[in-house]
Amino acid sequence: MQEQRAELEWINGQLKEKILGRASESGSHPTAISGFHLVRRVQANELCVFYRPFIGLTVQGFKRTIVGKDEYSYGEYHCFVAGVDMPSESYITVASDEEPFLALSLDLDRSLVAQLAAEIPHPARTEQGMGKSVAVMEADAKVMAAFLRLTELLDEPEEIPIMAPMLIREILYRLLLGPQGAWLRTICSLGTASNQVAQAVTWLRENYKAPLQVEELAQRVGMSSSSFFRNFKQMTTLSPLQFQKTLRLYEAQRLMLTNEYNVASAAYAVGYESSTQFIREYKRMFGDPPRRDVSRKRIKFQ
Image (tube, rainbow, N blue to C red):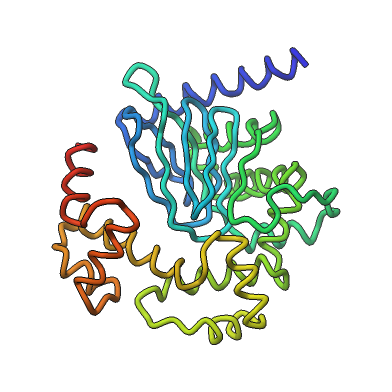
């Protein structure tokens, strides 16, 4: 047990050195490997919103993530896996200039997971996390070592085209064999209820401005209305209409924070016909009217 812990600590130490050596400033830094980012944050409570499926390995610090109505807290030696496109809030709870929050982020290719899942034996089924959109798990030495080799590959750019796909496959393979392997297999494999909901979530993410007919969306992914509604709420903790509203409000917030949209233009840009309704629903979700909320966040994260 002590040897396993020592191995984990050594790998984690190597990852810290690699991230600090390449990410000198606070932020999420893309790399020469497509979909692979090095993350360094120096400010606690820094808000990060993610939408796309991804795997995050925390190397230093702690984080709290809210997905729908569920909350997850995790730190170093943990993987956070988002299986579907979800509007979520992540708060870094421990970080400073001296000891920044450090992590690795890798886009999750669901089709590749499904391909690998078809080639390996089914893991022992567990009910842990089943039906949810995200999972948090302890990373074992094999998963962390694969991430370390992927990070070290950045020092050999000529090898990236050949070696990166192999190492990404290994990371996904290791996760499929782990304690959340059944969950990952289910959410990525065609024909499962979780995968059908994931397809619906992707459609909503791309078409959140359009009027939503739940029955039509259920038919689009091949489910009955009752089964679709039940499984959608189990996975996202929200009804389809609540999910669409959340997408719209988060996107409006992003437009006002990063693109300097005013309240009316942000409301119309995300599909609202009434600024009054937009302001009312925005305040209900974020606690303040749009103008006050955006001003507060700009000051906080400067």
